[in-house]
Length: 130
Image (cartoon, rainbow, N blue to C red; front, side, top):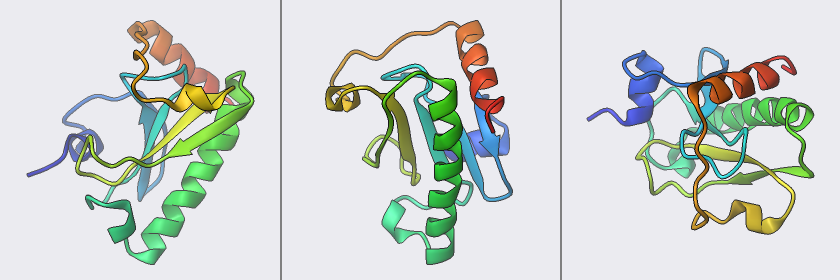
């Protein structure tokens, strides 16, 4: 069965896409901890990050690094936090989250809500830095 992320890759489900290559995709989390909270995925559906082949794993990290640099320029923050939890969706993914404090990465915090227009504005800010 396809994951929700594979359906996004296929175009069956819309997403606020920030960056895309032949092998990877970065899009806004629709239940973010902060403005600009992104998910970075390989287009190839593999459940566990550490089950990715070496080429895909390193490619994903390089792609995430490029996206994180653009995020840092676009969203006021001290750092871009990186986390891999892997329990929510059975498709390898990395969370990139603009943070000012370690507590900004606590997933038990209430998620933020943005309008479609706010999500689109965030996408535009980050894309402008790529």
